[in-house]
Amino acid sequence: MPTSSANGARPAAYLDVRELAAGYGREPVVTDLSIAVGQGEVACVVGPNGSGKSTLLKALLGVIPVMRGSVAVGGKDVTNMRCHALARLGLGYVPQTNNVFDTLTVEENLRLGGYLLHKGAAQARVDEVVARFSSLAPLLRRSAHKLSGGERKLVAIGRVMMLRPSVYVLDEPTSGLSPDLADRVLEEYVTGLAASGAAILLVEQRAKSALAISDWGYLLVAGRLMMSDAAATMLADTSVAEMFLGQAAEEPGGSTRSHAGER
Image (cartoon, rainbow, N blue to C red):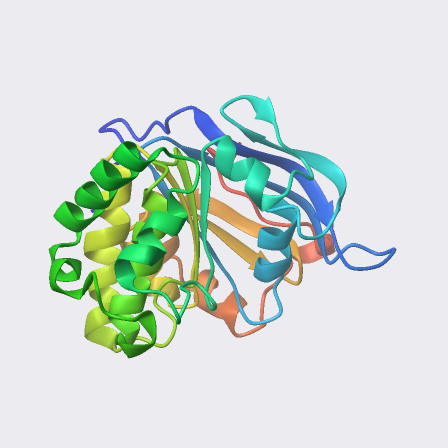
């Protein structure tokens, strides 16, 4: 369940994206995006295909350059830093695909995630991950290519957990899963990471399910932030469905829509 405080106040931003613009050429694909996630909070980014979600993630992770704006983690400017540097600063990324190494066992995948740890600490961290995801215990010596889709997702998340990141960026964690397993990933595993105190930025196509377990939501349409509000409020707003259908993307005069509480 969402973890916002009783008075509706959001925690201080730990992952803080301000007025970001990024793209693949001279013209940005996403423009003026300001997104924040506090520790213990789940914030989801939803939007129709082609809205700029993937571009946003690539810019956050240093895969493509940030043209304007900034990205900060824990108050430190990390704009245009690459993934390996971000990992050292406490940002963990779980990609949608290619998120496990098929030729390695489950345990080897986990240990690879703890590449910055010495041997004793790595084993302790493997034990922690298996304690959290008990279904991995009998699979530790199994090759990843023999795993089911759901098991692979757990290994991918567990591998990132090895370094105990303070921020998790999850790209379509339910992709390719059955509806029941997808719900379990969101309702149990994603919320569990937030309950541990981490800040969770979730990018997800299953918008209703993602909003249902999130504290805050961001709606992207055509590379722009069209709505920023409490996730429960967005769920109840019929205009969100209209935007997903490509309608009402802009209010009269071409202005973007932003609700109170946006940072």
